[in-house]
Image 1 (cartoon, rainbow, N blue to C red):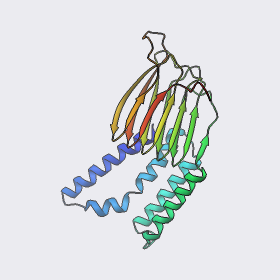
Image 2: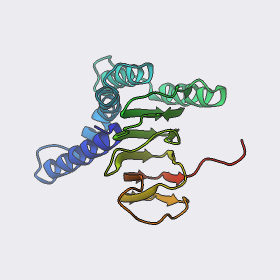
Image 3: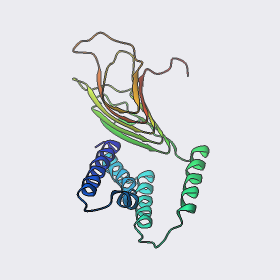
Image 4: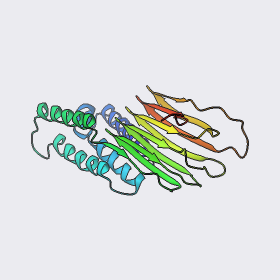
Length: 226
């Protein structure tokens, strides 16, 4: 499952339910959302673990950090001075970006199915599979590159699920591939700069399902000069 798509969908359902209960007079939407918003961070970590089928450093930090934030917002840890918490959090996040703490360059793998998530980081995911089937990639306040230049899609085409939330995703494909992009842009968009190729049953194909929220997605060929 695509981590970003799962989180965005879950958040929309939860927020809609909260406002519906508010309209019915059962709860107050403002205080409820203020107390439980860290659940979104926990969900992002959980969905990333499910998509990558392992507990990585980023997913572990999201899971534990989200639970700590949830304990603070719901009062489990007593009163918290948010006037200090937010500046410290922003300073740590900014320092991480400036120093490149979250920059990861994953080696090329031979897997037919790959997944990757970039949260406040820069990530590269690549496969050289001769039977590439699908990929699930997510960028949240970060950048991710999916490198398919050494891959070969299965007959009938491969599928890529891409979610960018306040982030950017680059999908790099060889020349000669037929690319289809469809999905939902919410205050964001995508761009296909690949060369158009003749259609035919033997043309390598990739179908990209995109969800872009205040972000961007670009499908392109590798640069001729590096």
